[in-house]
Image 1 (cartoon, one colour):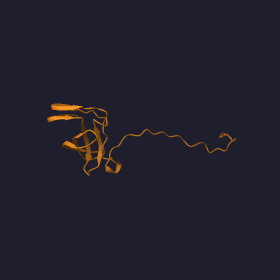
Image 2: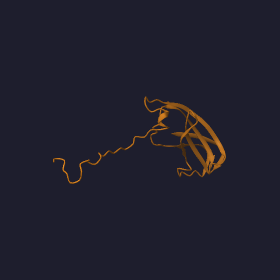
Image 3: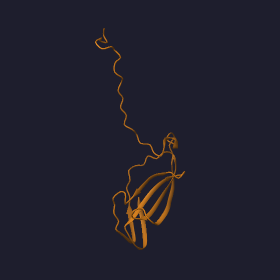
Length: 123
């Protein structure tokens, strides 16, 4: 994701935040330069900031992308913009499955034999 910005004044210690919000207002995930350890000491004039995220396996629903710029420490809101709305469609994974679906790693082991101790199965 590439975010172009233009600061009308010099801003120090800013925190860029990208949020994915479900249509019912549930925040599905947030990415923040501050919490991700990416320090921005000063923003001045025009520029671009890029964010690369892992694949989001969101369930079927309508989502909105929002971009916020806050002071460090999640203090005052300096700028906010509601981005585009997008739809995820899936025939099975709807909101009954939560916000996202990750494939789990499953293991199975048959129960121990019910054969009494000391008696072999071939007896």
